[in-house]
Length: 346
Ligand code: ES4
Ligand code: ZN
Image 1 (tube, rainbow, N blue to C red):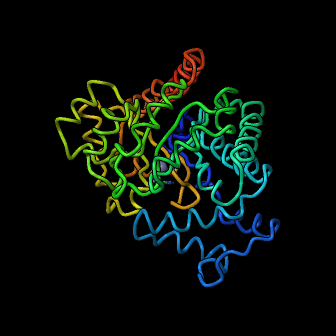
Image 2 (tube, helix red, strand yellow; image 1 turned 90 degrees about the vertical axis):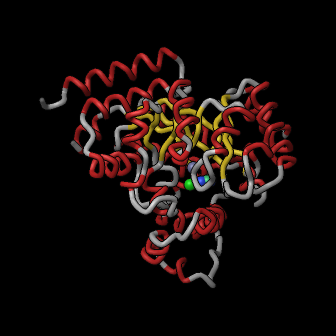
Image 3 (cartoon, rainbow, N blue to C red; image 1 turned 60 degrees about the vertical axis):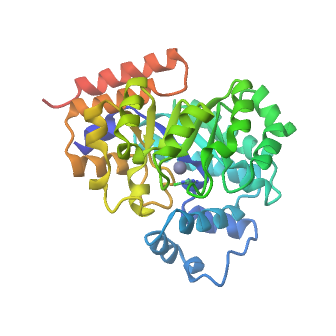
């Protein structure tokens, strides 16, 4: 089944490009860019020590500390291109045919790296992936919820972001970082502006926070997709509503385990979502930090729930239909799905 899962044409909708920064590239860029990582933290003494620390996150905030610290090594356009390319190469090996990639411009702006630099590097990586790997890719700009909405509005209004929107280098916006203290409704205005600019909308909700954050993301922010959303199962009425509307969740199993949102993959409401007809895709979130890329996440779900090939096909199909690419690209991916189905040993 693992070979079948690898061969399935997969769409990734929940990958933070900064979360794909493997310790090897992190140390490499630190030395190239003369960046000193915090010497008081023994985790930064070697790749093994760092990976070991990544294995022991106590919460979303504990992880976010490492995630924001590591970004210090990303300084130049080339660094962002190298990071994006390293992710696309690995995703391609895992059978990803379409990737919608998050990035956190505010976390780079704070360090004096311009939005134009970040987007130029990521766009170069995408161009290469589309040409050399035949992957379709999109870019989703995330607002950081631990910063005030005024900062998100400032980013939205900046000439760099406006230029990227005009150049169609950005396809949508998301909302990430620490969820519990910063509910979705705080970002109502910047979401309304983003929608008016023709951007697609999604938001992290129901990861560490309650199901009510899923409802406010849908009905106050007007998102068409929910990132994580595992707490949806706590509210059966809302779950039925989401199922009927066909709204897709982008679920990240290994992330949820590593950040202690659930004790194990077994606790994830995946069978319930399948039963109720809630659409979802399976994703890696921050693969450098959570012990696996997308295929590892597919395999972890299979090992726990032993899904049938038909169920896997329905998950891959939901991922294609829930993507933000053109219908022409969706048709190509549906054909690839048909090829994978025919190759399935009966
Ligand atoms: C994130 Cl796992 C997760 N949750 C919220 N915000 C994030 N940013 C990067 N990874
Ligand atoms: Zn995420």
